[in-house]
Amino acid sequence: MAATLALIAHDRKKDELVDFILQYQGIFARYHLIATETTAQRIQQGTNLPVEQMLSGSQGGDVQIAAQVAEGKILAVIFLIDPLFSQPHEPDIQLFQRICAVHNVPLAINISTAETIIEKLRQSRIAHLIFNPVAGHGNAEQELSLIRQLLEPHMHLRVHQTTPNESAEDLTKQAIETDPDLVIASGGDGTISAVAGMLIGTQIPLGVIPRGTANAFAVALGIPLALTPIRSACQVIINGNTRVVDAASCNQRPMILLAGIGYEAETIDKATREMKEQWGALAYLIAGWKQLNQQELFESEIEVENQVYQVTSSAAITVANAAPPTSVLAQGKGEVIFDDNKLDVTIATVQTQEEKPLINPRFRAVATMINMLGAALIKTNPELPDVYHFRTQRIKLTTNPPQKIVVDGEMIGTTPVEIECIPDALTVFVPKNNGSEKGWDRQESLS
Ligand SMILES: O=C(CO)COP(=O)(O)O
Image 1 (cartoon, rainbow, N blue to C red):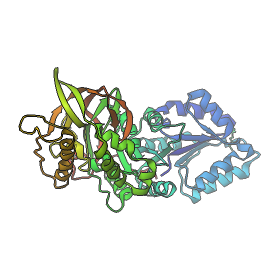
Image 2 (cartoon, rainbow, N blue to C red):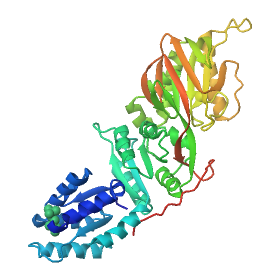
Image 3 (cartoon, rainbow, N blue to C red):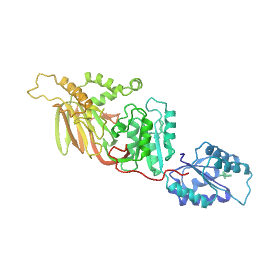
Image 4 (tube, helix red, strand yellow):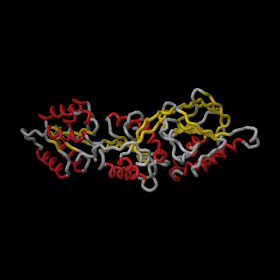
C-alpha cells in the first residue's frame, strides 16, 4: 500500500486545508505528501511540511495526480472543492473524481470526510524501507517489487533507496523523524547494521530483509534463508513478533554483530567484491584459507572490569554481541547470546608453557583456528586449550603491532579499540519460535 497522500484545494478553500493540516500535523508528517502547485506552496509556508509540488490545477496538476491514483501510488486524497465557484478546468476535476471512484481510493471533498480519513490513518502502520539497490548479486528492481507486493497489503510502505549521496544512516535518521511504526532494512550486513545503529534506543522495531553475501544478522536472528529469503523475511515482519536484543558501540560507532581483530579483519579485507560476486559467502572461506598462511601473531593488552591482562601470542580476537554459527571465531564457547547484556570475547592464542615448547607458536595458533572451525561445525563446546572465552559488558584492547578491526563486515581502522555492550538497545522482528516477546496488533490498512 502506497504511503503518499494527495492534497488539493481550490483558492477559497486553501486556508481551511492549511488549518486542517496544522491540526493533524503529526499524522501528515508520517506520509509523503504531494499537492498541486499553489496548494503545495501554501502548505509549505503554513506548516513547514515537505510537499512534492505538481503543476497547478488549471495547468494539468489534477490530471498528473489522477495518473498517480490510477497507478496505485496514492493512499488517499483530500481535495477541498469549492462548490460555489466554477473552475475553468472543470473536466479535469471530474476526471479526478472518476479515477478515484474507479480505483477505490478514498477521496475527501470537505473537512468532515477528511476527518474520517485522518481517523483511519491514525490507526494504520507506517513502515519505512531502507533499501540498498547495490547489495548482493540479485536483480534489485525485481527484489524491491517482490518486497512491495508482499508487504504493501499489510502496511503503508515508504521506500527509500540508498545512493552514493544518501547513506542508509541518513535515510534512517530522516525516517525516525517522522515517527514510523517500524523501519525495515534491506541489503547486506553493512546496510542492516547502519540502519540498526541509528535505531538504537528509539524503540522503533527493526525488520530485516537480507540480500547480501553473508547475511550474518539475519542468520543470528534465526530468519530462515534457505530457499526464499525475501519471502521468509517479509513473513517474519508481517507476523509481527518482536524481541529485544542488545547492541554495542565500538570506538563510538554502533556495532550490532561483532568486531574482529586480527585474523577475521584480515580475512574480510581480503574478500574482494569480485570474489564475493563470483563465490558468494564462500569468498570469506577462500580468503580465510589464504589468511591462515599469512596471519602474524600479535601481543595484546586487554582491560576488562578494571583489570588489565597481557596476552602474548594472539592470532584472532573476536568481540561479539551476536553472531551466527558460521562466524567461527566468535564461537569460543559454542554460542553467542544476543540478549544477555554482555559481549562474548573469544581469543585464539598460543600458550608457550613448558609442556608445549617444541611446537611452533604460529602453527599452534593456526591449528587452534582449524579446530574451532571443526568445533563450530559439529556444534560442540570446543574446550580448546588455546582459546579463551569470557563475557563482559565492556572491553578495551591494545595490540602490538596494531591490528585491523572489522565491525559488522566493515573495516573501521586499527587498534586500540574500546567496545561496550548497550543492553536491550534494539527491538527486532524475529520468527515466532525465536524467544519472541510480544505480538503486534495495530490495525493494518486504510481501505
Ligand atoms: O485548481 C486546483 C484544483 O482543481 C488547485 O490548483 P492549485 O493548487 O495550483 O491552486
